Image (cartoon, rainbow, N blue to C red):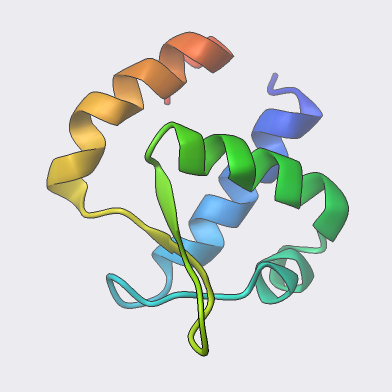
Length: 88
């Protein structure tokens, strides 16, 4: 069973995965789409950005987007080790 932080993170990633590649989505929209607390999701997405799972865009089109799949392969390993998600 996943912890709350991991489950919310995955919920947010699933929401981003439904968008075209490189499409930024505001955090409030991600949170409301999945019924996840925005303040808690902000902390999780900060970590996901640090590990290179998502990227943050500033300016008019601000928001989070998934990184390209090729870039994700190596960074995913670090993320899995950090959160002990062997089956992720």
